Length: 391
Image 1 (cartoon, rainbow, N blue to C red):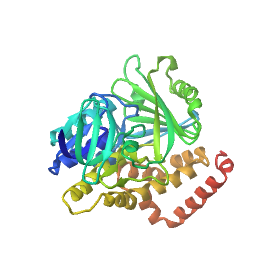
Image 2: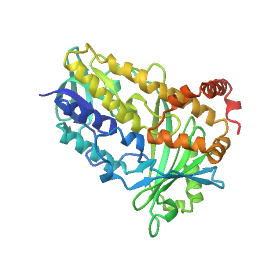
Image 3: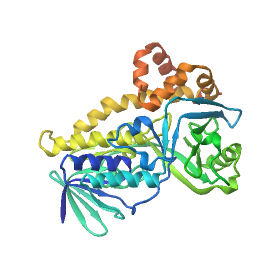
Image 4: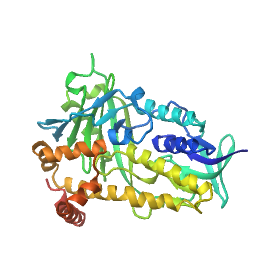
């Protein structure tokens, strides 16, 4: 039986980051994934600048476009474009991005076993046994990184509760090339999907178009995607690669660490409530996990509770503020869009957050009056959903 210090299950951005950071610290690290790499994953593939800045290497080899402008529309109506002097988001394809991150983990010393689904987990005080179809592996610790749909948290007895959103995406390959208007611009359509939005993300030779939201929206998404695709000037019949996916947002009662097991990324429900983006928190939590795993395995910490404490102290406040902002934005998506259109300060804040120069919580600390007003409106919306959804 092969033995490791750390077994990471799931080779997305959270898992590959945790594996790379653990291996770089000299820990014997195994990275498992049920799929053979390179593999694709339903996701728009946008990596904002603040997420990319967490990595100690350049994403240029897998970046297909650098986005510096956003075209906003409300229910496919007349729109407006706001532009930044610096990039805001990098467009990638998850097939290439995830493979690249895994390559960096392996280059740092991690052992990869892809095409290896996990069938069982036996937790013991001193170690964890992970069973696959082919063999069992023993690890002194376990990182759950197989996302919202993965079985590992349940198999390991880790309690996770998520509020699930759902999305649907497809792609269109233009007859010639991606139009000039979309070369460095992405589209965001607000107000058509309850608790969500639609998007157009330009890639190297095609555009990715999708819709996502929370609540009972699953039956709506196909019609909304067709309508959105047509509004962007493309024939919905030319959509290819249609895929649905789930968006996990943490709920009360979720346990992030227990004994020698911890959860990162989507498996922990660390999703930005405003953007629906999870790559930043995936990389952030993967790095934090490696730090606490090293302390635990060296004997400097008795367990992995320090990881959960760090997430709750440093990441949860950001997500909590973002959730309140999301609540308020849903009161009127049209008003939210007008604010972005007419207020340079509002647009500047959006840019600063996407670039990592500011945070939701940082803004709230500096503007306590605004933050208090947002909190009150958020509570009202949760008490009176009918009032809150009126536009």
